[in-house]
Image (cartoon, rainbow, N blue to C red; front, side, top):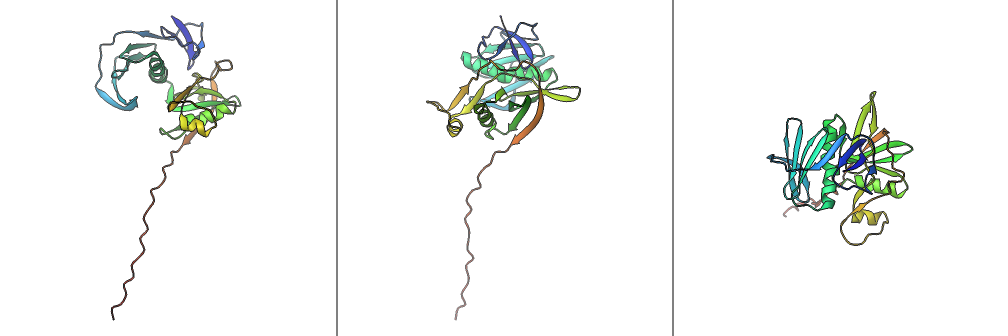
Length: 236
């Protein structure tokens, strides 16, 4: 079993996250293991991944989250069980870190936001917004300028003495090709890219939250047809 640090939690898991997460030696707080899950929730959510709509249900101590033909999770405060329904290793890792762990942290009483987070002057800056508003693109621009990525897609806030702190996740970005081209970052093939910055300077401690910025998705107005009034001419 491997131990890693993510969102301030020490996870012990049979999944290999070497190179993605910081290694840890402290006592585990969340275990992640493969298991057969015999519960099938029926409630549909608004969350789609790879074109598949997720189903969700509550248990006595947590929740069940399912994407048919991809993966199923059973989550509590201290355990995450997963059943691979047909996904590859890369997808399993992605869903575990961006979906299942978020539920566990929410159950622990943390405030969960769908947004990217960067480190500027030892303070955390979070960017939230609708899909396509530019959260990951904004974070990538700061990363290109030399800033540290604290999280992408999922930001976790913990309150200590009524002060907000961000739990560092891992330095990773999922960015569309057009966005990378606009930032002057070379791409080859594909439409969406996974950028994995170095773990060398990634922080292990809580980071004070300085601000949350809401990014708005601008939709160009449709060109309106302008009608000129027709002047009736008197009939002589």
